[in-house]
Image (cartoon, rainbow, N blue to C red):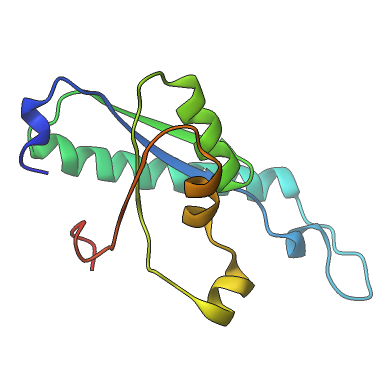
Length: 131
């Protein structure tokens, strides 16, 4: 990260979000859940998280930072944002889950690596300073 301030690059922090299926009703009865309220809270949480991270990165000397949140499937939204941003590099952290955990949870990183037209750099969280 120390070299980023010297590069004339813009950093876009991205966070995708979507309401889990259980929000729409679960079990044998109907539950009056305000999906719009839940979605708004998720969007606010995502915005708050990115703003916090942007502040941390700015303290390291990186000047050009923007934050983008999108409702939808994270991998699809990452790919869309990258396609709309010419000459971009997608950088992601991955916990490296495999086997049953990956099958049950899916792999955003794997989907992005396989389907993005842009180059993708994958880091373990410990390397990225989050572990």
